[in-house]
Image (cartoon, rainbow, N blue to C red; front, side):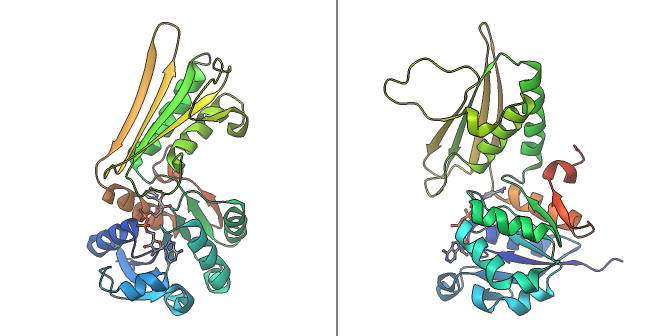
Amino acid sequence: MAAPVRVAVSGATGRMGRSVTRLAGRTSGIELAGGVAGRAGVDRGGEADHEELVALPDAGALLEAADVVIDFSAPSFLRSLLETHGGVLRGTPLVVGTTGLGAAEQRLLEEHSAHAPLLVAANFSVAVTVLLDLVERAARALPDYEVEIVEAHHRRKEDAPSGTALALGEAIAAARGTALAATRRDGRSGRTGARRAGEIGFHALRGGEVVGEHQVMLLGDADRLELVHRAADRSLFAAGALQAARWLVAREPGRYSMRQVVGLA
Ligand code: NAD
């Protein structure tokens, strides 16, 4: 029997970190190496059900023992992880679910992928991966339809529009041969004027305990197509991240996507 894949969880005390940890403990072929959290996370103690939980500055040995690292934290935390432990992590497969990444994080990830397999996904749900594919095909087949993306998340979410909404927008822009930066329109308020041709509209709702909902509307003159995904439990993302982690350990250095993991690319 193949040796289990040893997983270290970065952002281990968070909602997603705990979900990945719980599921890893119950998934065959996966062994939990331990979790990395901020000092505050460690001090809170008892919050995460980890065999081993260490603060970021002390995470070297834990990271060295891992076959793959799964990160669901925050952009600044991911940046610190890569800056502080870049040497130890060199060559270690990395699965990143953190959203709202900036240029500094993107640059560090690009460097990481030169030496190790890397998979960054705004959404690890297999169904959302299928949604990306469907949306791309719809955008190509209905080139004149106007696209609006509506997303809803729990009150604590810190970035908007969601990473998934932006990924959907990017898929649509790419399918139409444009760049999202040139076509993105976040919300509308006041005297906005008429809708510009080719615009992709984003609308973010926040409240309650909504795990994540994404609705893509393609609006024509006489009809409209709606594609919707509703996540009911964040263990869905944890399961996808673990599936990705297992898939990634056998790969060459470079960047990979969830579409490749589920066989759509
Ligand atoms: P959370 O706030 O519950 O947890 C974040 C964890 O990261 C904290 O518990 C802590 O361990 C660590 N952390 C972050 N910033 C820190 C800091 N400054 N100092 C110390 N520790 C820090 O968040 P969450 O709901 O678990 O989400 C984490 C990330 O994952 C977010 O970016 C979210 O958008 C993303 N997310 C992605 C997916 C996906 O499928 N890709 C799904 C859900 C959430």
